[in-house]
Amino acid sequence: MGVPILPTISTSFIVISAVLVAIGWYLIIIRKVEAHKKVMLAAGVSALIFFIIYISRTVFIGNTAFGGPDELKGYYTFFLIFHITLATVGAVFGIVSIISGLKTNLKLHRRIGPITSIIWFFVAITGVAVYLLLYIIYEGGETTSVIKAILGF
Image (cartoon, rainbow, N blue to C red; front, side):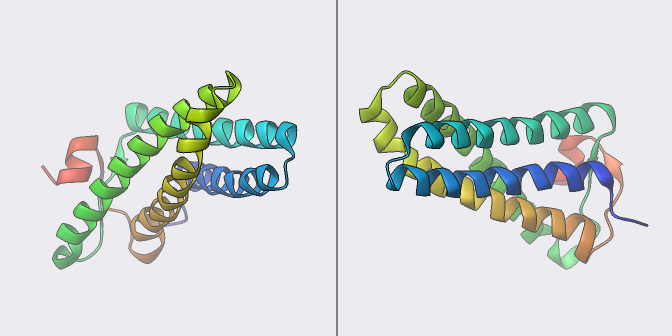
């Protein structure tokens, strides 16, 4: 079995978004405000592309269940739920960060922007780990509903 194309593409977009966030963070440190805005918006678009691919795949194809050893399933499930929770929090923080930056609510933006960036770095790292566990290290399990893929029932 080869590497599945949609999960590979969607995971790439999360990595791209994290790299863009790091570049955007650097740009604001050196006071390049307009470049910071553009790069952070590109990071947001990259994350949105990931989400559109992920949701489309979930709705039309299903999710891949963990195909690794049974003794690791519990650890994988805990890790996956942690990743999903972190990604959800990161997405909400990201939306608030983008809106507050665009509306020049700089007090809020400066307070949550760095937190959002750190959360997003962890989302990208854990997302790549999930991808590796599902498709590279172990052969993916069955493609099924999201609830069954995550919780096993």
